[in-house]
Image 1 (cartoon, one colour):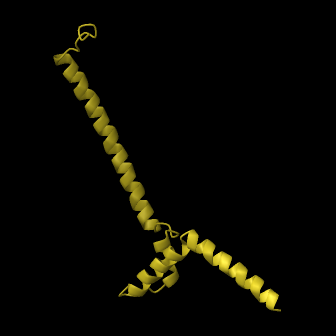
Image 2: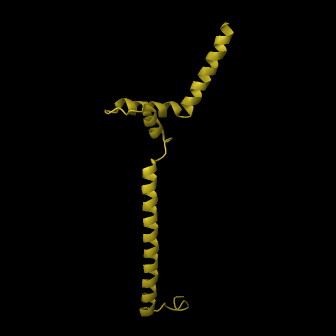
Image 3: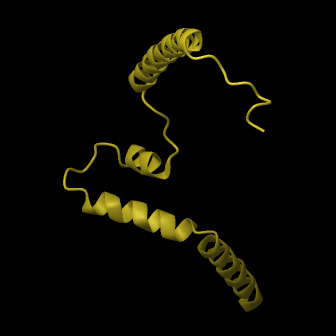
Length: 104
């Protein structure tokens, strides 16, 4: 029976070292400390932990807001690219490009 306990203890110690080396213990400790230090304790501690571990995805409302912002920024970028192209064309009409051979 003593051999069985030693084998289990050895496996537990190996697993603990594995968690320590991979940073799991430090990360969990820091998240739990953040939860402990939270003045307004969240209603759902598991959601708090998931959020701080990065496991929880953005809220659906946040996702929709980000999609709308992305769409607006893409439209603005396209509009600015077109404006840039038009301004370059206008500039080329007033300032011809120097000959490539003259620069050498």
